[in-house]
Amino acid sequence: MDLGAQALDLALWSVGYPAIRRVSAHLHGDAGAESSAFIHLSTETGATVDVEVSWELIHDRDVHELSILGSGGSADSAPLRVHRRVETGIVDVTPPVTRVPSALYRDSYRQEWAHFLRIVRGEIPIESERRQIALFEILEACYRSADTGSEVSL
Image (tube, rainbow, N blue to C red):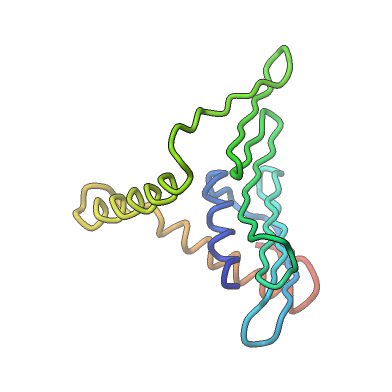
């Protein structure tokens, strides 16, 4: 699951890495590498996380999107949009983006490297160990679900 691991990690990180109760997955491709993955996760809180990745599906452009939908609001990554439910209705609370997309992309890597260096220097703790173990348990459950054609409980 080439792209699937990163997409799943981003989706789970975006919603605070909730405990996962059930996993259902469909993988397509040959034994060497999956060309697409469709993953459905049910969390302990009742929320769901859906991840769809493919490098094989025919589309007129590369698509990299993240959407988060909740009872109190929603967010989309491409383009960035954030909406919040308030007493009077739905309000657009999207922060203004003043830099060009290429600068935002470059700066994201700089921030990632800065974070990594702070960990190496011992300035901040490694928080991702628990998350990485959880991620690999979920990925393993995805393969079991795809192999058996049924939902897997964690």
